[in-house]
Image (tube, rainbow, N blue to C red; front, top):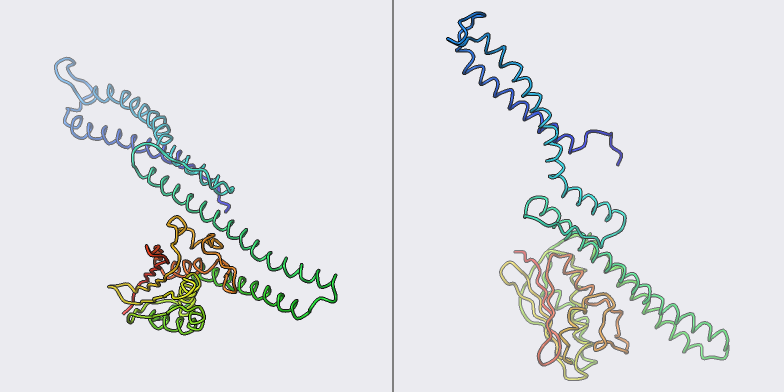
Length: 359
């Protein structure tokens, strides 16, 4: 933004220091005049050496006072300029770092040394902001690269199928159409998941009162056929747990959690338990399932987009697009909640969602 040229902060501080020093000197001279010289007899002539008089004292004192005032003014300007420069040196560092960040370099850090004062606090806060921005930009770049890769795969498969069909007109068209439909469905699912993730990240949704227990029952009812097909026992327990948010996004969150718990389970005889309850001023949803042991080092990566982990990749019709828990994490964050994933000692995962409760 264009601004009119004006005095620098350093020059303003210098003039302020010099001005205050000059005013202090003038006040000191005024005190001397009021409390000393005014009580000295005023006579242009007197017996020198016997008693002082105001005339002689003023004639002697005035040049020295004027010289002192000039000295104070010059000393205030020079000293103020030096002091202002030393005081504003940390601000210069912060400005340089901000300019580098504005040019796209987010890796630079100020790392200001010295005592903990206001400038040090500002520099540390600025470093924290740069670190968060750098992490966010890197995350967005990874997300864009992964999304491009995931979207390119079904398109490349479709192109290959069409090329094969063009070279071999006798190929079974029903098989070709079925494979194209499967690939197209996967691309549509991925696109919808990306749009939902973007919407939850923005947080621009209408809030209303939502009961997590009812949402859990709806999600379980929808996924019950999948659970029965895989021989998984699906239970919903608990009581009312009301929160404020988007009913659509919260339903998608619970659906993703329950679907993951069903898909990543034992081949047969597994269980999935969904429990909702109110705890103080929070509403808590827990989804617990059986399954293979989950390595602890794998847990922090499960909420990253497209990070499925080799132990959790599926090759059947429910392979997913690697955005299930990423969407859950985004929805929870948009609702000012917390998400906790913990591996069960016997295998499987315990997912706890804690959202702000409402009466």
